[in-house]
Image (cartoon, rainbow, N blue to C red; front, side):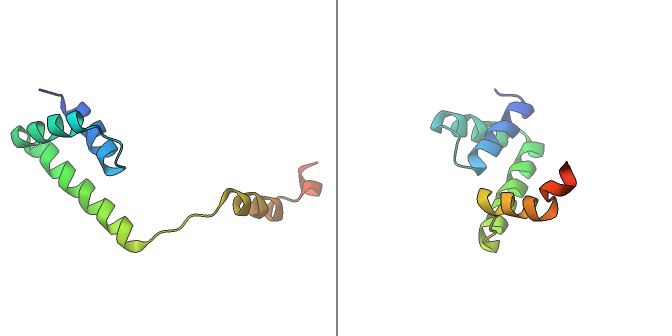
Length: 78
């Protein structure tokens, strides 16, 4: 059986669809035996669902660089 720490790592990987099939099976088996990890997995799944529903957007790298240049002009840096 995997440890709770390993279960948390697999749970996080599964959240981003990076977990392999065997890892997910090991996680599900662990969850059957461990109430704490079961609660953690449910909360993690709920968080993922809420983030997807919120349709969060991030700035592009170009937009980030443009914003930095506006906040910190080169004349101030020198």
